[in-house]
Length: 319
Ligand code: FES
Image (tube, rainbow, N blue to C red; front, side, top):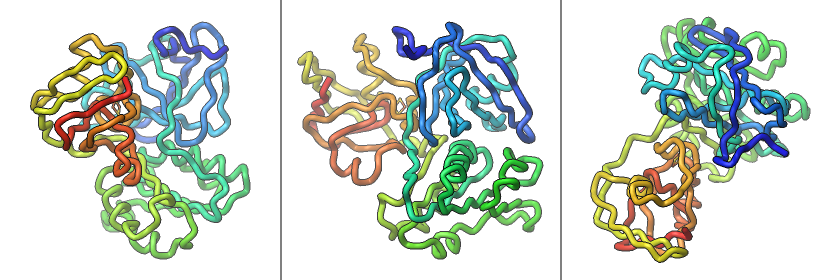
């Protein structure tokens, strides 16, 4: 029986904190009840429900899941919205908190002919998990890992030992960031390409891969896309209960449903975790999440209700 409790969350204790790089710590969590933790695949993340009320997503970093503990790596973000600052300043060995079961919006295609991985800064965390798996399977892959400096580089020695990695340190390159275009141009056309890093890197990656088949391009956002203005004035209908709600300007569908006491899953409220996904029965959502692929968004069969608007007058959800 996995350790998930009635609220879908898992009570864990911080069992270890280790230095990983400058301003970057590795945190290990073990379940309070000792029951096995759910398994996961590379690219998966968990939500930390921090005791200060914030919910934050962090990638699991071990490719071989250990049912007795999870590990994540957290960099203190100088522009922290409160999550990484709290983790660094308040989480100590012995503290308890709740976490979600793993969720994976960034799965690895393990049998691709070749895999190109691009990581920027702390964006290495899901990618590091993929490196371990690809290395273990003996697959063809190459990692391009950009950091401000060596001191900021998590998993440096482990990656040097594995090989297949080209590092780029901005401070050793006249403060120039990694140029993604030539990397993408040189990749075999049947390769699968993965990128996780800061927003400018993701934008450069998306521009460089614009003419690639979308199924071969994989991006993990760990900060939200710029928030779209929340236009209101449409109706959301819940098909199963028959309830209807008018969504006013400035409010998300999720906020309106929660205010009305509707029991729906959610976590980040930023369109980056996938917890609030709902099936669309009719209507045309205006997608603002960073989870659904272009094809999924165009199909209008599912929607992240924490950030979506609506192009039609009515949106009917399977809820
Ligand atoms: S709550 Fe995370 S995507 Fe909506």
